[in-house]
Length: 459
Image (cartoon, rainbow, N blue to C red):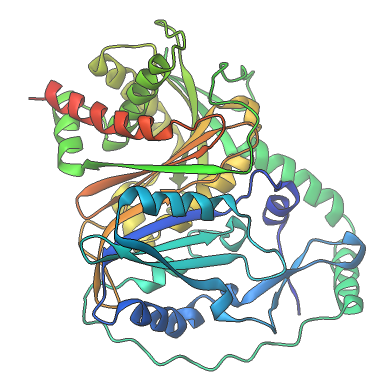
């Protein structure tokens, strides 16, 4: 029996373009394990059986008479997907980010399982990095595992199991794929129309509500929605990317929250809004009191049956970049986001961590999936925020130090921002089009400056 992609997952493949690959990235920086990269490679090999999808590829139905199916890849070779790289010692963060930018620019090979991981040595301070690329089609819910997730342990002494033997199942022939598609349609004659309707419904439902910053209004997506404001963030997107990162202490953000109200997420959105304001000014762009940038903010929500975190709902939030006072900016965003959380049954950070363990790549992928369900004309950029555990994690005995997400770009949108909290720090990953937002490193520096400014207001 074949396992067919659902309509939403298939749409990610259909809509993907050469200039805007959909893969979600992640950068783990950790202390070099006692066994070096060999130990990390052995860990990947041993735990690959926990993510069977990582040995499967996409098979198209002849004539595209049905959605693609997942099949075991009889030619699977771990060495193709798990690669090694090195920086000239002592490697710097800038050199690592140059490598990450080049890797992010390249689309995944659709004839193979849709993931890659790079083990990078040579970082200063006896550190190594793991750079991952995963297609969102692999992630169909919070329960889906990501490779980076299964590599991490709560103890440096966690045992590494022996690799299990894997025997691929015979891939179905073209005739079998056609027959399977025919059987699907025979069992449900209306399935073609239902699938088309469900795709449209999913796209509408993705934008369940809009957080209107100016008035704090919350409206359903079925109401009239104005297009996103004009922004230099929205320009033709090329094939090349530039990745930048920033960090913020979680205790500092909590101090701001305690002093001024709201949530840590509200504070983070305020930081992003302030950094975007200063970035626009640095470019000579006009910024007035009413200037805003609309962000698509995915939020994990309860399903209709009360299952926490089982799906992601996206909200359009107008970031008040025209407001020069950070405290006023925070108050306006807090008011807007309060309406979002009250009406969407959003799941709190503690619940998400309990449900998912450590699954930032999975949750950022779900956010990217949600973004693809909305017209890009409705927002200027995607901003994802995924909470993680506030205790150290280890891979092959090496302590994980930093975790940066890399969220994909949509066509015509030159910037995405992902945030992941882990072990007392919030890590920002900025993915940008090299041509239109080539100064993304300036924006990353401004994020850290905005955090410092907000902390000063809380003294």
